[in-house]
Length: 133
Image (tube, rainbow, N blue to C red; front, side):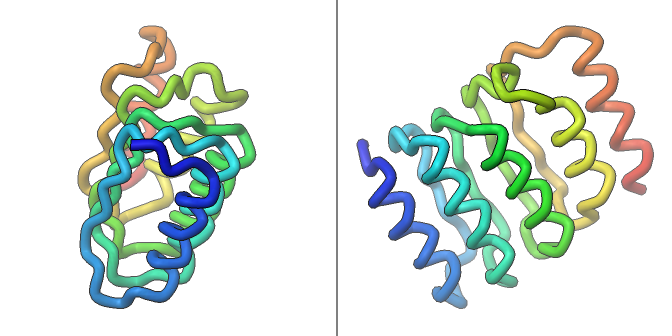
């Protein structure tokens, strides 16, 4: 699948306006950083979607920051999957992921497998779950 930026923007619009969609899987759709940012932004306008798989897509620092901000107000999303997203290449990813875990009480499943984290990063990210109880 290759939906690119235009396809990602279409998905973002669907997330924003579709009020009965519970799960969206856009794994490996070759979505660029601007596209994942659009999808992340659309989550702020959706209070129904509970699962999103954004695996094997590109993330920019700006997109990950938008996701962090969005998830502070979105409490319906329960599963967020970011497998194989090369998150360790995103500036300040550790702080952003920690903030998401610490502040979003809705997320029950955060899937980060196949990202290259150091042991120190994993410890900090997992420690942040302590604050979300």
